[in-house]
Length: 408
Image (cartoon, rainbow, N blue to C red; front, top):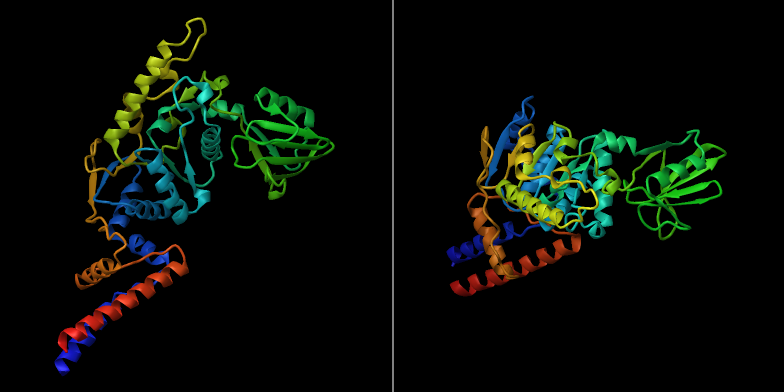
């Protein structure tokens, strides 16, 4: 009987040990930050010459944790190229939570189809301009998340962007008439009340302008011919959001006005940028596929009007590879394309599917524990964590009761 009670207590102890509680993300961050492999990768990235590396075996959000750790330790700009827009959005959400929205930027495609200007997505144009402005302003490094269709489009050159960027600071001696003239030159539309990028309004000594480089419009107040104050504001409520000391006003950089001088996005970013590619083979295939579509669309255009050629506006596989060789590249797929200088293997397994069967989840956690693994269970809020805890306690009691009946 004592032996049976001992077995019951032992069974309860094993189960109780495995009941997960809500943990801070810091615990998992530290696990990756202190990983010897992460430190080795950081050391290699610190070398002066660009190199090509292969990280094999990373699954799911482990990619995001690795990128976060490397970004924090290396302090270099990162470009993350995912397979498509949906996957890019998934990792964008991960990285924004881990690194912070200020240092994670999304770089989408602006056109749904090549040479179809009416198919331009204004929201995406805004995001693209925001990224270009961040790079051009030489602020601290950021993580840029993108995908093949976005890199396929060439961008306005740094020189042309500088030439077509209006910088305004508090205390500047400029007239409202000057700003009015510049904005018309940038093809901004003057309206009574602004609602979207590319619009501006003038009321007395106040100029409201919605730049393509910011999510919210700016309100510039003048005292005579001097800029007295600048603040961003909400379009819907008209309430101020943040006081600004200086701003940059950028036109639609995807507009045909800027078609003459364009370059690859890889020409635009710093050569210190580390490029992470989820699937290089697919990326190269997508670039050539998109370029073929652009050539077909170009052939159908009217010959009476001069249009920029596909190679002036878009990127193909050959030009991408030629330029990418100048960067440090980290390939994440199982089959690397570039000549790899070093490979790092991560031995990970996908999370089993439990289909809301908590007893299977608890058994899996127990099995991991007995095999020497540490379990982490992350929840979106405290209520969810408490719910998990209550469920596991109920299962623990039920299992213990079953064991007790087994020995009685």
